[in-house]
Image 1 (cartoon, one colour):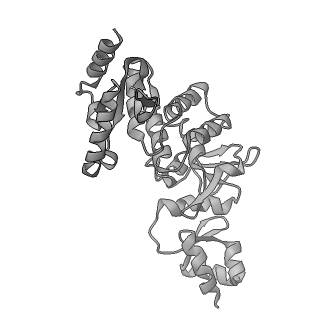
Image 2 (image 1 turned 60 degrees about the vertical axis):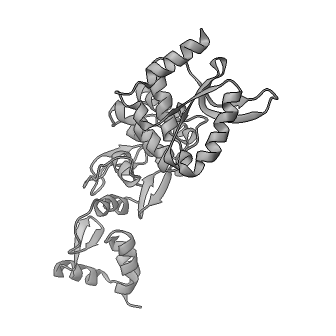
Length: 302
């Protein structure tokens, strides 16, 4: 196998970049490396880092340069958020983190943080060494507008495999955050406690109820019949008022579920409970959900 054949798959995995040491390990001599650079076959991306010439510039190629130049570095903050698709920030000079006490002079990097990051908070995605989803959410709290923190938490939990506990642990280890930044993330994850990861609508509903000053409901509240049997569970509810809300999606309440839903509704009605079904449109400012909930709770608790 030729040196080119040995280097090619490695360069492909690394977005067209590789180190001088990797080229040497593939079988290229120092003279051959210098010849490739002079001929324009390879280009210098940073000290000790080369790239295949002629490839279109991409943010991933830019992101891997400091990681190759400094093996202890990881993509962090906005750049990590881009990798995990939590934010849209394809920086050509990426944000990275290096171990506390080390130099911040990193070729190809934009913002360089000296942070202590536990090995469990580091992963690899798309060939890039990057902070975990949970740690990335924590770090983004220091740079995102406050209004973006809750949606970022929701995306991380609903679509990126993070958990409320994992994010809370990452917050605990992120000493660079202010108390206000920590509290904003913790408040966002608190809404997910007891909620299925696949139910971001329920979380948005809970946050909206809190903003309206509605008394905190019970999550996944059991609805019990006269024999003490649980006939259903409401997404959220107020047992004293025998009133609950369910957030409906097409997946869980589409035409194929109508027959079973109807039987369930009859069983719920027989217990004296009332269930109000909520969809995404009910959380729009123009909707009257707040008035309906307040009226229903007021009538039943009077």
